[in-house]
Structures are given as C-alpha cells and as structure tokens.
Image (cartoon, rainbow, N blue to C red; front, side, top):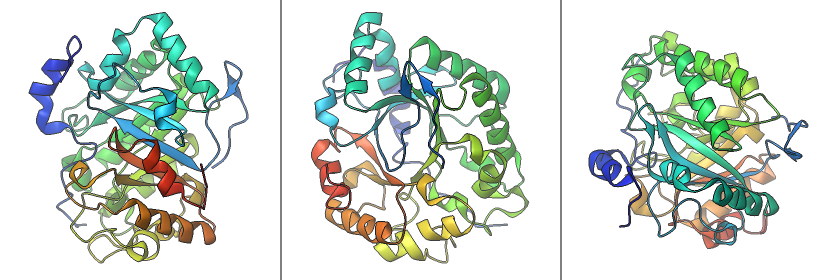
Length: 329
C-alpha cells in the first residue's frame, strides 16, 4: 500500500486502531435546524438528509476520491486528526498543494459535497489522558481553518471515561464542543458528533447522563449525529425493528425513534453502518435491508440520512442502493 510522509508510520503504529469502524465494545451497563448563514457563498451545513462517508485507509488516491466516485453522498469525512496530529486520510490532505486542495474543494462544492475532518477515533482517549478540552478544540479548529475544510466531526471514543458514568466524559465533550463553536461559528462551519448508539441510553450511564446530557447542553451547537449502530453486540441493531423502534434490553431506548423520544430531533439522527461485514465486528446489514429500514423510517417522519464506514468499500453504488426509492440518487 502506497504511503505518504508520516502515513506509513501511522499504519504500523496504529494498525490496531483503524476503528472508527471498530471501537471497543461498551462493556458496562451500570449505572435541526438548517443554517442560513454562508461561508464562501455556500451554506455551511446542508439540510437533512445527510449522506456521510468516512475514509481512513489509503485507496489508491492521495486525499479524497473524485467527486464522481462518491455521487449520492453530501459529506466526506477525512479520518483522522488526533492529539498527535493528522494521520491517514487527514494527513494525506496536508500533502497536497494549496492549488490541489482548492481544485478538490471546487469539484466537491460543484457536486454538493462537504469536506470535513474527523477527530480522535479509537486511537485517542482524550479525557483519560488528561487532554485539555479548550486547548484541544483551539488546536483542531485552527487545523480546519488552515486546510480550508468545511467543518469537523467529533468521533470521541474514550470508552473507559464514558463507561465510568461519573460525568467526566460528558463534561469534557461539552467544554470541547462549546470551544469548537467559538472558533468554528455556526452557519460557517459544520460541527457533527459520531457517538455509538448505546451512549444515548437514558438509564445506562448513571449520574454522568450519557449523550443525552451532551445533547441537552450543546445539542444546539451540533448540526447532527453520525450514530454508530454497530460494534455493540452480534444481534444489536441488525433488524429494522431493533434499529428503528425498540432496541434490546442490553442497550435500552437506543433505537432511532427511542432516541428521538428522549429529545434528539429526527433530522439530527443519522444512521451509521459498516460498508461491508469486515468493516466492523458486528452490526452489518445488507444495503437492501438498510434501504428498507430507511424507507420505513421516512414513512414515520425521519429524514436524518445514513453514514457509512468506510470508503472505498462503500462507493457511489452503495449509497445509491441505500437511498433506494426513498431518496433516489
């Protein structure tokens, strides 16, 4: 596999941490509005539905693929910017010249695709390691601006901190998000989060409050949630019923409409799935099954969209099938 600058080192050192798609499973059960302002003459946050694809691994192209290769998506997430700096697809973006980046951005804008960087992933555990949320937000926001991206996606996967259910993880995320918004103003930049679905349970995280607390405190600053409905158990979120209406007793009240009933707007709930079975430990469903689930959800008033880990396992043909007749490409 071709490497760029520090990227080969990232592969060897972090090969066990390729996992936005494969975060460690949670092991404890204890305890939308469209933005009207513009940047560069273009609305920053696209209206729902959101069709989001992540890319982490080298796919034969340095940086993002051609816009035609991801037709049907409207957000492409470069993974990852971590505490140590940019790695993998995010690092590739830095190796392009200013002119090359401008050309990609122009092509993506013409195709209606936003280009965003995803931060942390499973490699980073910022709360556990004592990273300062304000300084970290300032540094990462500066990177977004320096490399002329449309926004930032917060893929926080500090499971030990979150599972402690003592509020440290939630408070870190709240402070981090507030500071990001001071640096990346609403209406000018996209700001999304990518939590695992169980973190929205209203009963599993004790006084910490889980992601419902995060949403209550800073949900108005977050454009939408790329929710990971996978890697949480072999039978979790694998049928339309368990994905949409009633989750299992292992992770209670974390299906799409249950999350909405607990206060998260339907247009902010983006359903995340792996592109192929090997992209996750579990939770994979076929594109035809997922298309059927989206159709059912749309009929009930949902319009959040779908997210997938990862390109190039989920090219334009993947999202075309998933959008199906509900939102045809």
